[in-house]
Amino acid sequence: MHQLRERKYLLSLAPVILALFQAACSEQADISFFVLVKSSNYSQDSLRQLTLLNYHFFSEIFVLPGGRIDSASLSPDGAESKPIPYVDRGGNYYVEGGHFDSLEELDAAHPNGKFVFDIAAPTVRLSQVRLSLAGPGNRTDIPAPITVSLSQAGVPISPQAVDPTEVFIIGWSDYSNGAADPRGIVDDMIFVVVADCHGNRLFHTGLPFEGEYMTFRTIDVLVPAGTLDTGQPYSAFVEFPHVVDSRTVHGVPGFTSYATATYLDLRTGGSVSDPTCPAVPPPMDTGQTDRKE
View 1 (cartoon, helix red, strand yellow):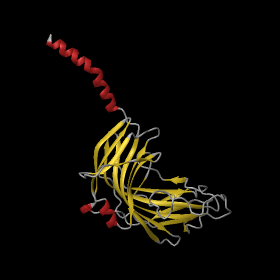
View 2 (view 1 turned 90 degrees about the horizontal axis):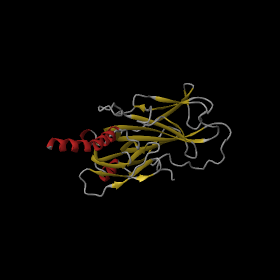
View 3 (view 1 turned 180 degrees about the horizontal axis):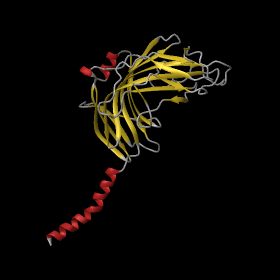
């Protein structure tokens, strides 16, 4: 009789166990990946001279098409400060940690160490996920500044003299600390983006976990002929995110990085094709602080 009751009890639990198993095995459908960054940002003029814009601390959660975040926060591990909530910016969720004039100011405001992520979405919950943001010897290991170069038909060109009817190549200086991820999740990346005078992105080399993306192994990228129009200003940047720590939790990849980016203005030859371009284009992202929204 006791065995019969026990059997009935186990049978009553079967639907619950099955539901939990199915939930555990199903793929989450809300989050592409999340990242925490300390970065340096530079502008480059037509003579290839760099000017420091800022040091920056921020975090992003990238959402899958049709996905949603119900709540999310970031905090230093062990800190008594209140967790910082992520803000919905449409397409991604964002924490702004501020811009700084020096690396010392950045590190004083956001010391290296472990950070805690709490993210809740309809199909997945990431609770108390810890990632480290600390380079060798606990130092901030941002890559060396990037100098960007342009060429067409094998000849260097000025960023103010791009022929839109021809292929052009964007190259860059060495990735000083580029490396493969020892955890095998995401290697050090290179992002190249070109936008028109209204901020619309016309060319992007791709994000990790969303298809092909460029790594530290790449030395240049080809922009197809016809991507740009005649007589127009354009904006571009090259970014090197160097991975510090990475994890995949419940099917969601996350990483921390030290990054550097260089922004530069382009212009194509020929007659003006869009007279509505503003005198100063909008910033390409939150790192380009010499331009206002």
